[in-house]
Image (cartoon, rainbow, N blue to C red; front, side, top):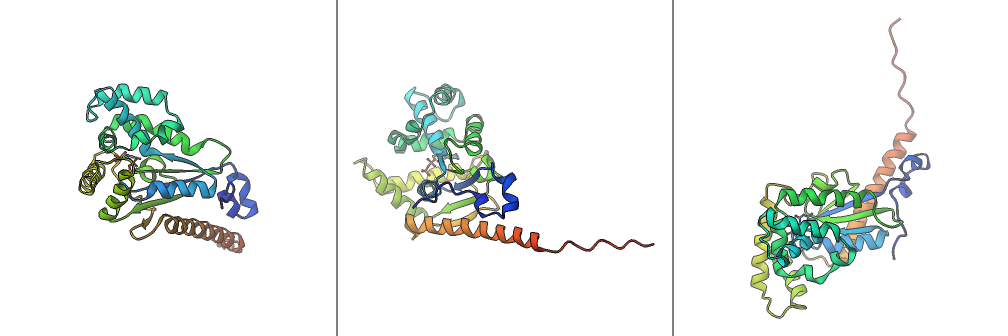
Length: 261
Ligand code: CDP
């Protein structure tokens, strides 16, 4: 059951609601490949009535266009024309397309994502989405690798999702084998490890948990259990904020300092 347009201000004492009323809440969900971050982020957005952005799909779209024009995803001069095309044609349909999910596009995505100019070019789009999410919504949920650290360092709630590499490979294998006959578990595991290493060791915006992120290990958790744990984190975070605010409001003012006569 979605909580319709749940807002941070719903939890604030009445006297504090005015100025905060316009502020959209931002939730970031980062983590390595197939950790379950996309599933969680989408479900969170649905439950809360927020807009959702899969930032990995931006890199995937640029990668797919680069491959389509015969470019090498490692070199900016090859990627630039694809980047220009994608920036002009970013639609929700493109970002949700199954064509972005092939192993070849996944591999190329992590190569274009290591190019600083590509990251810079996609930064404004992501920040604009977080600040002004489309539709009449109370906030936005973005998932990726660097959302809590680079794209939205001031986000209200940050999650970093992990799971063992075998568990992640099993999930990705199940997902891919539904659509492709030629996929093997060993190849999926090998691809995943290579991509994790590239994403975690690149010079710009590597996969990293923000210091203030809540780390959620989804090994052994199903998607609903993961969602419920995340919702519990959000509730307890807001409730403790509300309690802090209420405590501060209830405190008697500090006595005025006595000055020597
Ligand atoms: O779904 P999965 O975790 O396999 O990948 P994804 O989130 O769609 O991201 C595909 C690739 O885009 C990753 O391997 C990263 O190299 C890159 N990416 C990134 O660098 N920064 C982001 N915020 C999101 C994705």
